[in-house]
Image (cartoon, helix red, strand yellow):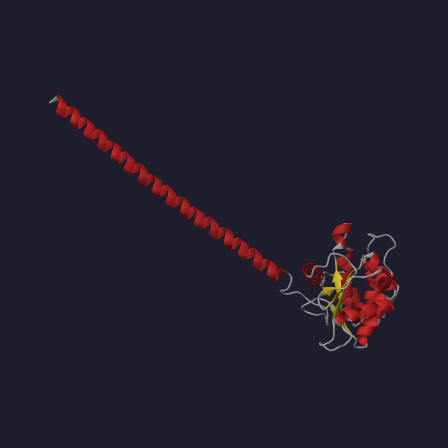
Amino acid sequence: MASDSRKNSKSAARDAAAQAKAAAAAEQKKRERLITIIGVAVVAVIIAAVVGIVLVANNSNTSGVALPIGVDSKSYGLPVGTAASSTPFVQLFEDFQCPSCDHLEKVGGVAALEAAAKAGKFRLHLQPMTFLDQNLNNDSSIRATNAWGCAIDQGVGVQYHSIVFQNQPAKEGAGYTDAVLIQFGKLAGLTGAKYATFAACVPTIKYHPWANAAENYASNAGVTGTPTIHVNGKEMPLTAATYNDPAKLVAAVIAAGKK
């Protein structure tokens, strides 16, 4: 009897151990399934977030951007001249607060490029940038670009572009006030109703989105400073000669367009 009792006791212990082991295995499987479900859910959330970010990034600078009359919807630059699409494509990237751009303007380099474009030597786009706002801790570049957009609408885009640089403050970072930007409209040749429309446009932020889109376009094109010239999508380095001699600048651009 004692022997049977011990056998029954051992059998019961074995059964209890087996049940405990089975219960533990079942619990482990439940935990594994739960971890898998949570992991899949987290991955799905991350994927959805990434897709959302990409969609926002792709649409933020192109969808619904109001462009000044005649500005290119792909480069966000202002075309100068009417050269055929088969000619070299030249882009001049400038920030209205850039002293080096001011120099290129004042020595006649930009006017020479514009004249060559009007003569059909190449297609030219004037490309605005606004990165100096961040560097100089102001908002003058974007406001000057906005005012330029208002001037483009009134048919004096090239003239206004030049006037802003001709009157760039001697101290970098001093910037432009709206009153000054409005006054530039008169210097660019606007009078009467055209000037009144331009003056009313300047204080608005109508073309801030365009300025932001243009800045992003330049950044994506690899432009890290101004002035920068791209010929058929490739940077043409400015040398001391081309930077200071308009004739050599135009010749270098034409030569780069043949490569």
